Amino acid sequence: MFDRKKITKAVISAAGFGTRMLPATKAVSKEMLPVAGKALIQYAVEEAASSGIETVILVVRNHKSLIQAHFARDRDLESFLGERRLSASIQLIRNLAELADLRYVEQKNPLGLAHAISCARPLLGDEPFAVLLPEVIMASDEPVNINAHP
Image 1: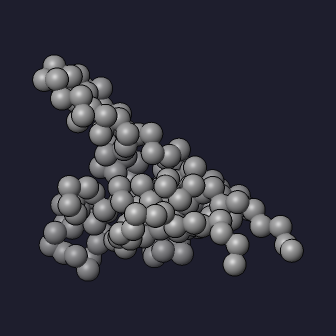
Image 2: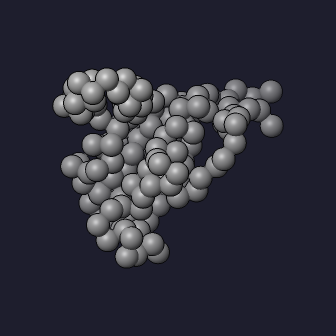
């Protein structure tokens, strides 16, 4: 039997221009396009968290991205919703920030998936990791068991 390290990190590439989905992606990145009320990238982060991933490294084009704003706490919005007694909505947006330990890495030039992963390398070290693609939505009641032995 061999010793296999538990996978606790995932990389999600979100730095491209989304050219295959133009013109929809001219103003909004592909990862932020909504499907059934959620941004594509949210499905990927939720799947990672459900599968036991603790740290999700998001490779973004710039550090002031909508992706970061999507997952960050927004106390002004929470206050606004609180004044209107919309506690369920407050919990929905708070949950986004608590899905996993989200880390952001900048890929200045979108040079493909392998380059995006190499940008995340300093946060990965020698640990095994998963790669998730936000445009690939997996619909299942049961999360992927990434640490299952063959």
